[in-house]
Structure formats: C-alpha cells, structure tokens
Length: 185
Image (cartoon, rainbow, N blue to C red; front, side, top):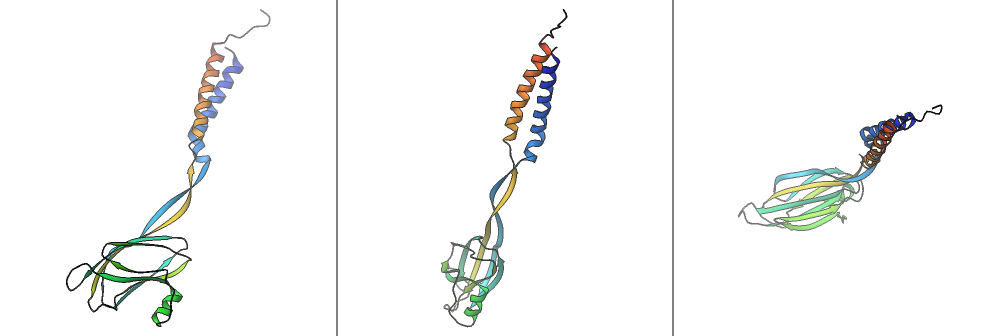
C-alpha cells in the first residue's frame, strides 16, 4: 500500500462528502420569484351609487383581477365604472375636482383588469354607479404580484462534489493496490 496516495484519496473523499452535504447551504444564488397575495377574494358588493375601499400598496406591485357585475333588479349582466386613485386624487374626486386615475374603465361582467402601482401609498378602489338608477351586484377578485429576491442553494456545488468523490475513490484504490517500494531491498 502506498500511504501518500491512499491518504490523499481519503482527503479528497472527505472534502467531496463535505461539499456534497454542506456546499449548497454555504453557497447561495440570488433568484427572483413572483409572490402572489390576495387582495379581494370573490368579495360580493351591492353598489347603489358609490362603493370605496382604501388599501395600502407598495411601489411596483402588479394588481390583477376580475369583476363580475349583474343588475340587482334583473340579475342580468351589467356594467359599472371602476376607478383606482391615490389618496390625494381621491380627495380631489370627492370634492368633484379633476383627479388623475391610476386605473379607470367601465367594466362589464367577467372582464379582467390590471395595473402597476406607481409609488407606495394609500390607494382607493371605487365602483361608481351614479349614472345608473339600478343597483349593481359586484363580485371582485384581485391579487397582488410582486417580484422578490430570494437566496436559493447553489446545486452546482454537488457536481464538484461528485467529481471529488470519484477522483478520491480512484486515488484511494490506486494507493491501496500499489506496492510500496522498499529502498534497502
């Protein structure tokens, strides 16, 4: 047995095993993932004139949703105006001023909507039914999608560990099978 080859092979096996078991936890790779949070979950609303809900939202969040609108009188599909604005523009809207909307559209039953929040703050979701004398039943479903950076274990380290284990095993076998030369013989 050739001791230096054998010990070098065992050392490579130990380093390979350490990398295999602990390497992915020691070396992390940043990754971007989409995190989805519910904002409205099939929330039913009866709108006579105006319905409003204020929500705190962060910059860059994508808001996606769908709206189902039916007439409270006939149970037929109908239409309603949906407005989204920040707090300062909501105060203008209440005072019958000229607000700037983040989102403004007449939505009919089953339509979807989407917008990106421009800056962090309080936003007001408003359903405006003042142009219709008939009450509306509105069901809204909406979620928030944000991009978050998470650190994930780097699985590529395991490939290096496999190589070290293979080479270490080979060197250990060679060291164990190789005869030691005796210089005085």
